[in-house]
Length: 586
Image 1 (cartoon, rainbow, N blue to C red):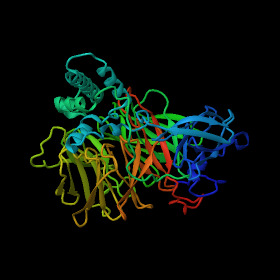
Image 2: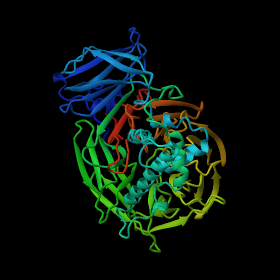
Image 3: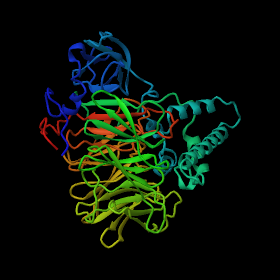
């Protein structure tokens, strides 16, 4: 049993993790309060107010809160210094602020004026709003948004350079220019996926790459026209779920890296860096960082993280089939190289987990996984190191060279797993006891893009459709489709879904929308939790089982792709986990 976070002195149980960082040297620090108003002095509600802390501050690098109905905001913790204070809103821009002193004392008033051009604040997905053909949009998302957002600020700058070329046929200039960029992107994809391969890159057809270069180049050329420096009329498309108690804390990972996923283990953020064999570990109270190497002989690139119910950590690889297990009690690693019994190499993506998002073995103690390289599902026996795979059947009429077996979840009886197939628009089941494939659910489009699945306590499956911008709700017990729901922004590229067993909702992180969606199965309502910066490429979200805070990370890859490199702790501010007693044991 691991001790719960020590939160003595915090006013509420929900404040637990949040208060953890802010009990240091309180007497020497100050609290910031203030208001956000428009030009007439009227309050602005749900404005994102971000505090960029000075280096002397212990804890998160950037803290974001939201204003209440009176436009008031409060940073409930003390800070030892402030570099800057800023406000982010879709329809307003900052004009002036008064009252902030260098020592971080308040009271601050921030004046906003209406914004007519949203180009610098709207998410990348806003630029896809003009794509009226859902199939064209889905194909573009699957082809182009695997490593970074599209169109990113850098892509829009490239469009501006193209627009400046004087030519009799500007459409052809755009097409050729974007075709050249796609060639370069495919080269980078080959390079990234070939880093650990002694025989060289696997080729574009076996990696995240643009498969239909001409089709995609033409699509981009048709829609990314002009300097792309003007945008208006974008909104989130659904109610915001933030309030004055919502807090987002961002921890920047220092140095060159390609961080992917993050989880909270004890009082530390554990973050995978696929550019190396290292895990980045951040103390949430002090902000101090340390690096731990996964002891693998070859490059494995920590990729997918799963909490264990015993407080341990499971790590799946980007390369070389190495599964790792960290035991914080003994501070020891155990690793397995998952070559199958017949000597086949395995390309693990997700390890099996259940409704609490923690690693789940079958009734024989086997860890199951999705094999993205071989198009299979398989198991690892942690006791013997034995591994085996079972090839997923083809989807008739959908033999796409981008097809990959991706997400994987296990039902509550631990007798069945469900997998998703990217590039074939399908998900299906596998009977663990009989070793036979069962139901296959074909989605309307081959480019629907079911990615990282989740499952509820009642074995309801949720599949985020990356290409289609939708969420599927499916009953695995009755084998019935409950519904398919458009997300508020179908260009947001929903990468994953995570069941929250206390709130009984689904959290949906997006790669292209700078938001996290919340889906309530009882009402089918979708709410929006906006993030405080652009290029917020998310691949996962985890729910801390004690505090209910959301854990995620900005996961732009490859290493030199532009974008923030940060892990996040998000308190939605709804008090859902407030009944957890301070100081209780796990």
